[in-house]
Image 1 (cartoon, helix red, strand yellow):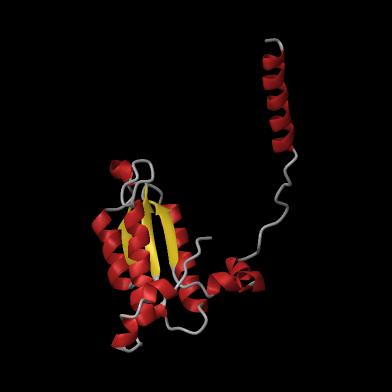
Image 2 (spheres, helix red, strand yellow):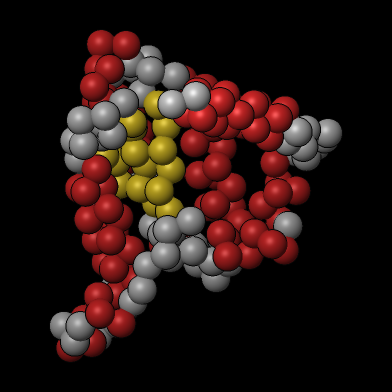
Length: 166
């Protein structure tokens, strides 16, 4: 019995030592385009689809999503801005009363102006989480197959395409 409390204390000390020895961030990129233009981000630039998530209670997170979306549209290789499949997701739908803007105004901006998909979800209550991935897949497949012949569209396009979440 005496070994159990000692083990618990020892684990706490190890965890404390581990967390205090993490490397500190010494510098930030001067501007966000450095990160986007970095060769290591090539996989992000060439992604088949994007999910941009913001907190419906925090306008700063929405402003950040605006900036990232614009960078994706401006720097996407090999396609026009209307061909970039982006789904904007408003998270924390369970905190509806604390939102910074009405759902309708954000939805109109995203769908009509940006030409992107829009879904609101709540991870806390698992509300529309699966729907957002179905919506993203629908957007990606629809835009990817838009220029293909109708018979090709019907021949198992979803089975040929693979999805990876980063």
